[in-house]
Amino acid sequence: MFQSKIDTPQRRAVRGAAVRAVLAASAARTPWSAGARRDSLFLAAGLPFCLPSLILLNAPGSSLLMGLFLAVVLLDLLTTAQRSRVRALRGVEVPSRVPPGAAWRVRLRAGLTWRQALHHLVVAPVQALCAGLVLGLWGAAAVLLGFFGWVWLLPPGNPLRARPGWVVDGALATVGGLLLLAAVPWLAALFAAVDVWTVRALLGPNRAEVLERRVEHLARSRVDVVDAADAERRRIERDLHDGAQQRLVSLAMNLGLARRTLKHLPAEAMEVIVAAHEEAQAAVKELHDLVRGLHPAVLEDRGLDAALSGIAARSPVPVHLTVDLPGRIAPTVEAVAYFTVSEALANAAKHSRASRIDLVLRRAADRLHITITDDGVGGADAARGTGLTGLRKRAASVDGSFAITSPRGGPTTITMELPCEL
Image (cartoon, rainbow, N blue to C red):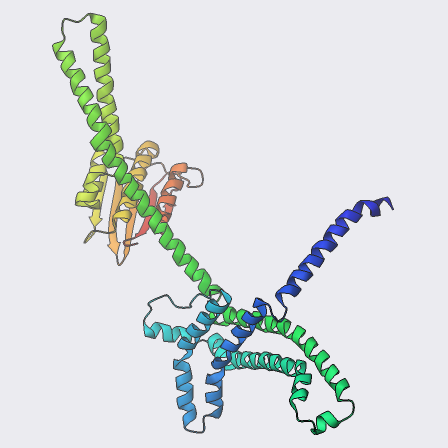
């Protein structure tokens, strides 16, 4: 009893919410509601789509093939019209199965699917019958409700008015009209919901097509992100080169001038100037190295071959470079290849204890193949090294591949494949 008293407010709240939901649904499905009018209009707009089936069924003999050909050609137009009907009258967007602006050959090939043929040749006629049923029931309800009015308009000697019991029949007809008038909006809502569901299921893209579009969208988004990152790196390099680096160079020059000319200063003051001059020179060198690492100008001006030649020349381990690139590739891919090779060479010089590194770049079709081999001690493991993980992530950022073979005792071979165009 105590538990029942505690649950009473909750039960009342649940019952109240259920009653309000029922009343709201009933109000939305009254014969004079906007929802009932929209559902009936939506169903009536689907009546013309049963024409292809009627044409095929009524096509005699030799005209059957012509009718079938016309129906196949019109599949794409019918699909577009159905999607427009659903969007305009129900507010539901059904994506197209073909990309916008596709050639007619692509659109025709995409339209020749069993799902579209099933909808236009089988489902659409059934939906037209359902729409005709709803409209007929609206008319029947209007006729039954107006029974007494129709009888009143008949002349006095009409057999219907003279027949005994016609008033009872009229009352039953009116009650039936009221019941029918109350039921038709719900039936129209059911048919309209099924209509929308079939259009989305049969005329929209299937799961495989949705996933394919998603992959394409993610690929484009990834390319945009990589390009944006490369452009931002170029902007930072330009701002540092034209701004902070020039200020530091000017400061170092002023301190150097003061160091050479102010000989009469006390030793303590001269030591401060000398220290400041050396720190400014070190800062200029570090900033220069940072700017060059952000996006080297030689990469943009002369391409990947010249940029990698500079890296090979600066490497503490001798690098034998072989480049077979007939032309320039995408700037973003060039940047990824440059920084990936630069980091791989730095890792080899730091950890491999190698005496020689072979770096080979060649282009095969639309792929850039990069091979880095050193004669070091080996034992490199991508699962344990964050540097190798970074190389794999750089390659994957442009849909490239990365692999490493490094048995203990060497040699270590890194192979990468990058797309030449994004």
